[in-house]
Length: 248
Image 1: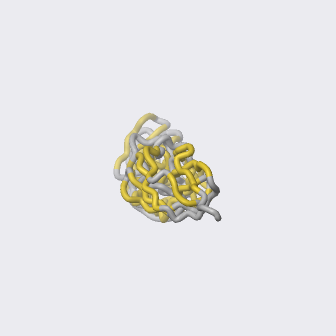
Image 2: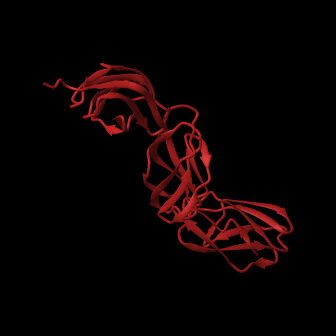
Image 3: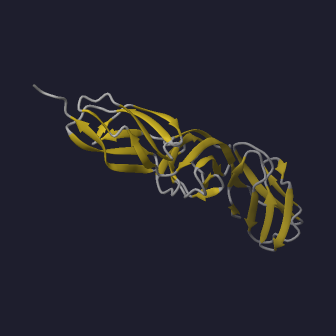
């Protein structure tokens, strides 16, 4: 007498299908010592029942006018607990793979990012791998994991658009570096790095459209300015010119 699924939430509510023979006029389906909260006779070979709350492993039995069946095991599973995401932001287009850490994840069937679901790969009971789906728009969304034990929320993931660079001011400074530069553009609020010809520059985010950076030392000539965030990079070609100091 197989049952499907053979596991469900400790809080109850799992709809279980029992298949077998001589199941007409089923009067009760019992999970351990608890009766199912609802029983439906589908056919002489099939009964559905809603599991009550419980813990551990219990035997499921079916009672008809002819008697009670042998027990079939049903496993109660606790709700998952999520502790962290390996990355908390990424491109609105999605496609990047992240790791979800927690407990009770071995039966995970889906991960939702703001209502958009993805199918995870179970690594261990404490870790999942999932490819982030595309987001509807830039901004934070809730992340939830659904397992046989239920659904758990509580973590956030932020979709980010690729940055753009509008202006770099001033446009020149000494090769020794140290020039305070203002970079304007779009989607720069989540900037990870700013470089001048590949050399990282110290920077601070002023707002979603403005950065403040200090040029690192460079060589005389033009330098590309690159702004990078979790969604990608923007390059302003030859946007800054390093000027050599005078010599005598």
